[in-house]
Length: 178
Image 1 (tube, one colour):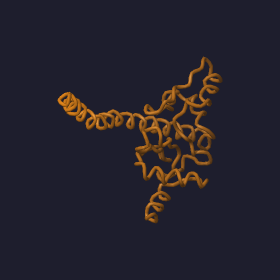
Image 2 (image 1 turned 180 degrees about the vertical axis):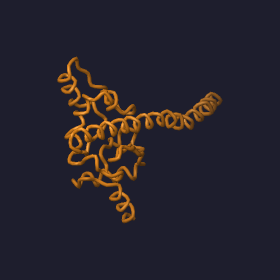
Image 3 (image 1 turned 180 degrees about the horizontal axis):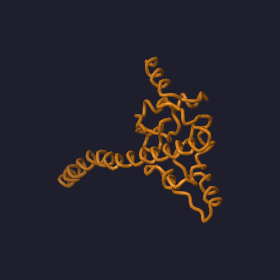
Image 4 (image 1 turned 90 degrees about the horizontal axis):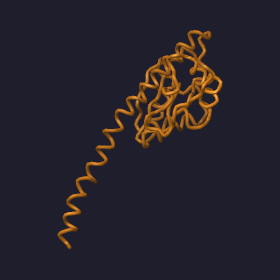
């Protein structure tokens, strides 16, 4: 009986040690796809602003009419969200605005195509990638990965209501936090 227990431990121990690494390896491509989605949304926002007197959309659902932004682009592959559907633009918009059809949070209201590479336009909930971090879209259309600590600082700044949120605020916050 003790040999069976020892064999069981010897067999399950490597699995327990390897499983977290396997899960991290599977998560990395999802983070890259998510960043690609944000970049695509960023380009659509820049296109929108160029056509609307340098103003970003009031909400990101206005991008659904652009060919660059099909509903799938608004879904982080690490989230439980699903693409919005609809047989007409009105039905698609109605479905999109229901919970579970957009993995990202828009901060671009009141900003425009003159927003700097420092201005946060869109971010995702920290829960999308298991609390390890999140992707963030900036005013020039580029996306960056923030680790969990930096993400928490960004969310704390966002929760204060300050707009626009700038990357320099996060760096300043990091420099003043023990």
